[in-house]
Image 1 (tube, rainbow, N blue to C red):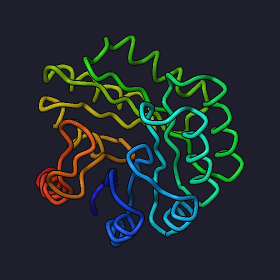
Image 2: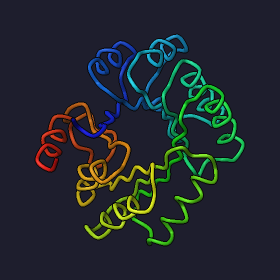
Image 3: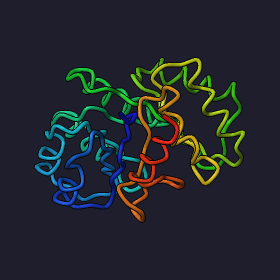
Length: 213
């Protein structure tokens, strides 16, 4: 059996999402890259697939983002992803709603330029846990294979950590992290549908994992 692979989806209509998630075990719905009505969110997040509600900053203000995420939580999202860098009030309002209904909280850290030192990464992990994260997600650009090794090293001392090395040198983390204890890894549904640099297509990722397990 494959370790959990989470397919990340963005830029789709509600109908396209419902078709895409058929037969998947787990998917991430990138609400920041979609135009979904309240009813669409209700329909999507009430399906039996394990879904992560994610709404990255950039396109929407915090109020609108919180409204979308809380709508997903109340509709049955299995997980909600909140950036550790976000404002305290925003973060805590979403965590409160998630805890109320048993939705697991993913607190995530992103660094699109580099992978910090081991001590910095460990302190970020601790902060994510202190803030109420059930799962910690650390996603950093890997500029070398040693960056990827540093990210993977976090799995040895901590449970419930997802590590992602972005970029070409980080692809290895997407393949081996779930085998080494990460709860899941991210994939694209097909080539051209990547939501992050270095993301691997679902079928290809499954084949790579089969070689190692």
